[in-house]
Length: 200
Image (cartoon, rainbow, N blue to C red):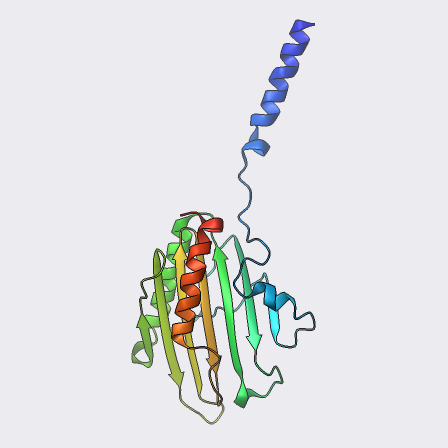
């Protein structure tokens, strides 16, 4: 009887200490974690807001091909002022959060943001706001061409631990939805929350 109980105890201990028990949970972003997520989810008809867990287009400014990748989880929110398909009066803004397995992945993403800005040369204004562990900002205005309306883009990205948040907007022949100062204020607010998912 004692031997049987001892064997059972060893088996149970093995089950608890095996690979399944020691595997770390997959990084995730809790529902309504983003600053504007709760508001966006109320727009069930998607008249202006969209919530997406699959980011395919970065909100940063890029003058190079390709797009950063490698995060374990991500979520984005976009807001379109009119959502009517009229390119001339397009005005959009968004919020994106990227979560990596460790801080090195998040640092790499921030480096990529800086390199993508640098590739734009003198057509872009880059900055480094003192927010979180590190931050980067950029703004760029494109002139009108025969096939494109003039467009202004701007964004602020901030990292805390293994998480990165990015706030962006763009507009064509219409007023901008946000200022760079407002993006910085959002980034500062989110920096205080990122430790909850990305560690610090």
